[in-house]
Image 1 (cartoon, rainbow, N blue to C red):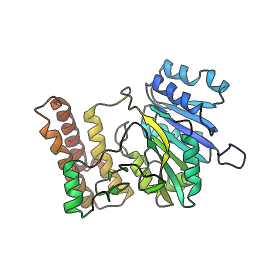
Image 2: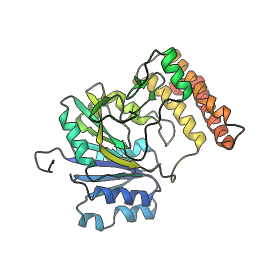
Image 3: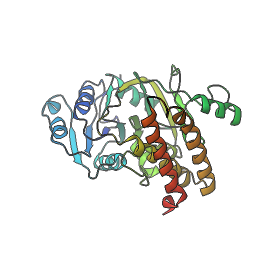
Length: 319
């Protein structure tokens, strides 16, 4: 078992939050019971509500060994909140968490051990105990196998084409290399984060979709990323504080394009072709649901994707 000591890298927990005080409390409860303690928890609050402040400043946490720092970040933006919290933190390791996850008691220890066990590692991702990795849809499975030439399962752990990202199903028994780590459940080396330039600043809306893929692509220039199956946490996808389906869909399209253009250096034509293909293939399922119970939601998603594409075509992304 790892023990916190002067020789062990210190761990700063980075948590952006927005209007989910009860989820935040549940997360802090699980951090207070870890077999490996953390140096500090930096909470970047984008909502500024009294309930969140009361949870973060509850004297119970210090009595249980947690050192919590609360930052106000306005206007709310998930990337800006994470960047602000990281700038204010001091640990050699950064544990990136969403405010609606709950860690099993040895999760931090397992992540730290996985990171230390691979000399080339710059980051590791935890396993979600209640949330299986979604496989490719029927449309994407056809594209991956018939058009891109992947054999069954070869896409696991990969980032492909228009930033399709896949986990492992089933999860491997031991630590495995992966091409991306999720911002809800990852531990990274601060030195690699700084060398990579941190989170990019080109994301469209405050939900900043795909920011974890962008950071992963940048981190991999300095080392390898790994999946640690024995580091487990639950992700509850709390509904509070979320943007509408239309805004999320617009954000998704625009951000993918920006990552292809600026982070990966693809040409405008290449990036646009990938994004158009992505939007069409992703929208096939939404179109089929328009006449069903999910019709209104599917319509909002289609509108969001269309607006994201319009921004790109109009050259808004090149400014």
